[in-house]
Image (cartoon, rainbow, N blue to C red; front, side, top):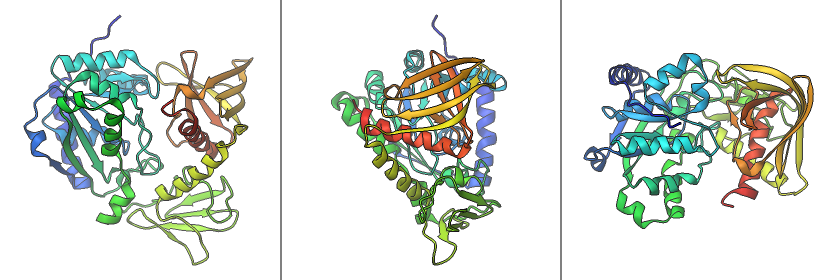
Length: 400
């Protein structure tokens, strides 16, 4: 049965945007630049935005005013009872993350055909370290099919203001640039590969490189808390999972190597003997390079004991078993109990590029149409599974 996506409820949408715009100006000195070409653009069109933080929806809605948009939103948020009604009222389009979703595509086409604007985050999930993440190449085919203008909304500074590893709102600065990325004639002329490449380039960001140029203070107590969930390999002794963070300090319990985070969100050595990277982006790139070398071996495998958690249609998390979570080149697997029964589940790695993950000690996967979460006994290893999944997909399944 076809689901009809309503137009956003204008009074609520405009009120919310007015409040958010005031907040963003006060908290982040929000600065918006709109190109002349965009200012003359009329709906329908598609908005593509880089997914830089957990406050992106509010920033983009504020920056795009007075334009009212139907946002493509992760289905996980529709599972939350207190949010579902609001999202439906605001005309949000549910989309399963990192999985083909024909109904979501149909909904997008329907909204565009009635003459409205659809906002999409092609990355599907906000960044963990401050650099743009994987983008599904299917976005190119969708844009070519729709044959309407495409607008690029590029946000800078939002990760510095609200990093995913510590969801606190830090007083800082956010800048937004709005440009027309494609017109219909360009989409007709370019092939899917060329469209995809241009989309990736337009959406790319490294918020720490932006910060190095702007040097905006982002003062907040406990600036580094939670960073050990992303930067968990010590660059000096290479030990995993022994990094700890408190206040503005990130250190290794094995060898004492330490970094201090300054008011700009950049990292500095605690003393001359320490070996660190200046930004979380560079640190995580180094971690990923190590994983790429590991997964180059066809016999690679990694496993951890873990709890199996069932995610209900209302977003409730319930422990339903425990066993071993494993990932190798071919698949991700869970071997253990499920509601008292022994099970052995496998999900092929070519089915999706990444695991859904919120840097809080678990990651999600779908099996037989149901949604589950894996919570490793060693919670810091959750991000390693996420990183390995990405490395494996990039090396063996991307564009194949």
